[in-house]
Image 1 (cartoon, rainbow, N blue to C red):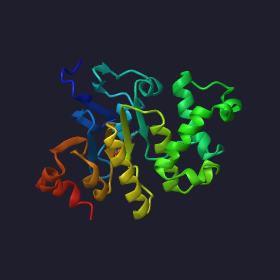
Image 2: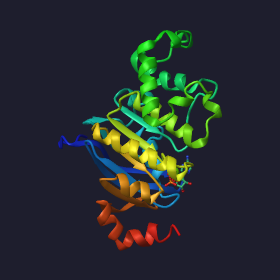
Image 3: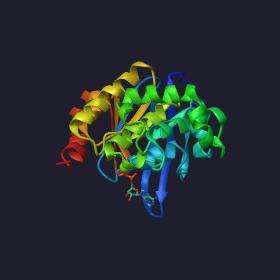
Image 4: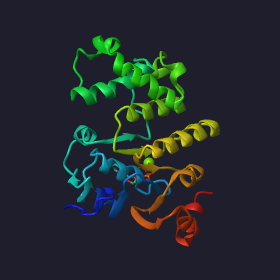
Length: 256
Ligand SMILES: Nc1ncnc2c1ncn2[C@@H]1O[C@H](COP(=O)(O)OP(=O)(O)O)[C@@H](O)[C@H]1O
Ligand SMILES: [Mg+2]
């Protein structure tokens, strides 16, 4: 299965996912355009993280397919999907707590260049000045350069998320998936992250963002899909979605 439209980077085609008797995702059809920020919103338990996990190969869909750049991703392993240009920030950061912030950011750049980790990579970390300077520049972008020598495990929750974002950016992905990138951040850090994500957008990176925070969604999204009980109940521009009574009932109203 392929899509002919050249502007579509990711096509989630008729995806269903069940967990036992639970229909976590039903009839999901999603088309993400090149260079756009596509937000997925919806109440807790709507299926947002499940959808993201299907896109990155952590979960296999029960039926349907995920097509990236005309190639079917379904059945590929997470690292293979990563290699073709899809990177993600999870709801719970996945980091190396014993390594410094700088080294954490260098690891994915090594993995990308060399295809996989080698046991020797730790020994060579400090001799890789090209990767090191790129990691420093990405840390500058996310506002973490002052903490580059700190153990990653001792960062605050918000800073861990920013570090994980840096670990994605250093890979120069074509598609970046973010599951609640501002969760656990103060309003100030949230605004800094929004500014950063806007700058990434100017560089033409396509993004899917899952977010609870309406301020974040409406500041960033070009298009919004609203999930409720595993189905897309509305889709459109932020203005269209905001005005949709079904959305107000299922999500915006229900959130308070
Ligand atoms: N691995 C799993 N096994 C069983 N049920 C799951 C699993 N992951 C998610 N679910 C269920 O699927 C539904 C959607 O969950 P999730 O995608 O995490 O929602 P959201 O991210 O929108 O809050 C929920 O009812 C959740 O309990
Ligand atoms: Mg979730």
